[in-house]
Length: 342
Image (cartoon, rainbow, N blue to C red):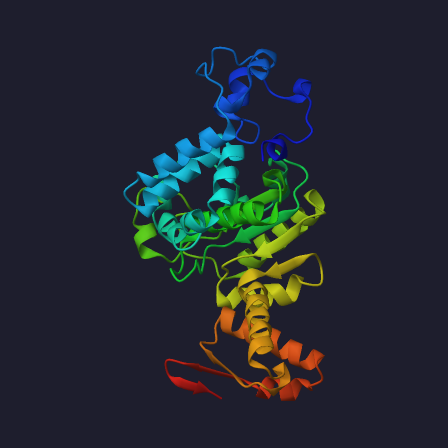
């Protein structure tokens, strides 16, 4: 992991001294060797002992397990990520089952709810309604040019918690951390973005510490103009990037996916990502239970983004296996708290 974070950079290309120690992508903390400390101007800026990555990991895990609550563990891990990504990802990868629930669901939801009160260090890009006309300029402020994955939210439907506005930034950050830890995507290739179009969360609007726009959520043309400007800027500034829509409200998620899916490399995780995972689970189950997908009748509880997304994905697979669209759709049924949807 050390080599992954440092890449193939030569010493002459690295920042030196305190500046290097404050660079979370390149900082290795006490793992810098004696020779590196001399070459990079670190002599005396670190405790004398050179620690192995395993020893650093042991120290982190010990501190993590001494925390009293999951939110405290989340904050500890975020602080580690903000100062030493090499060590952060080593710990996450080697303890994935223990740490995944801390850096993503369910703990990230609690962190988003308290976001404005626990905010420590900037990460990602915030693009608000007030910055229409300057979105490309904002995206050019991002320090890394080779962005491959953008995860963007407008904060309207964060997990099952509802409208969290700008405080939903923890979701793109957490999702991309998992992409690095589990898929090996270098963190400098990842860009979390929040489109701040206001919030209808009364508690946040009445909170003097809330960090987002102090206004109700935009529902009109200004919203679409901001999204359009973001999409165009993403294509121009980061043309090699995949754009992932995350936790948009139902009123926008489906229409934005329809509008932009054929214009750039883009998908909606709640609609398509969830659908792909559910379909893969169903296909795996059929291998054990026997039977064909086209023979199944599938009943869904709820008809939101996830339910409709899964239904569309399963129906598409049935069509691929020989059913007509009408036959495939008749195999998928939905009901909610009021009963069967017809």
